[in-house]
Image (cartoon, rainbow, N blue to C red; front, side):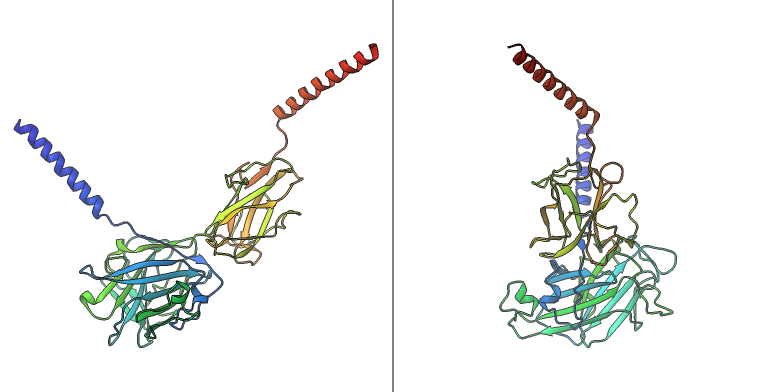
Length: 398
């Protein structure tokens, strides 16, 4: 009896420990930045026209005691720079307030490159600082903490707004507010590939839109509990960085109700749907003969005659089922590409592509009749011919 009780208790403790580990396990938030050619003016004022094509993340900056400050985060990119807008709902200012962005890259053995590796490597993790006195600092991880230098390869600014009302030009008005508390606004433009040329700061970002990098925000005005972070945990807790990625929009051939469809009949309308576009935006569209291998920066082939030349996303950034080829008269294998940046080239990680779904590499096909269909048609025509022949003979004999 005692042995059974020990086994039950031990099992319960093991279950509890496993449950506790699952509860306490940190899952990095997923932050995505969409492509936009609308680059903000970096002046610390977050104008609505600069950021209203961007998703708002309602976040909390958390200090070491669990206290939090509400904030709004906006993030996008234009292929060369990551643009970050941060609105922090705090009425206070201090001798020096700092807004800090830290990154986690991969380890390439030199200056850091590519997708995050969840490890702090000396001289391979980048950090950018914007101070309330308009001084910028370019930082890096040096083995035990982040050092700050003045080797600048980015732009940033911050402003503490105290007017308590909004205008149509302000991001607060765009988000539906007519009266606001005092708050900080800060803006960053950080290049995907750093180029400051500094001898000590070799940690500048070196990534592309196809990478996923670690991302941490810090609001600082003093040591200890005067540091606030998103996600929770300080800059040295590398596992508690968010995942920042730059996914391209997605498209897929479909039927009129939006169900995936990769094979169409002659003269059957071809539809396309998609997601993760900017809201209410028109894009160039190409339906082309199947390309066996799409390579970055290749010229987009000429579109098929009679196919749609553009698409329009809805207010949510989605593409509802849209006819892109009405009554197609030509058998074949086809791909579809949305030229998001409108440069006539296929840009991996930027443009949306429907391919590799059917017939090895095609996005959709209009196939020839199968032998089964041909045989069926032959049998039907043969039977119809026999019936007509019989009726003709009957009329003659009558």
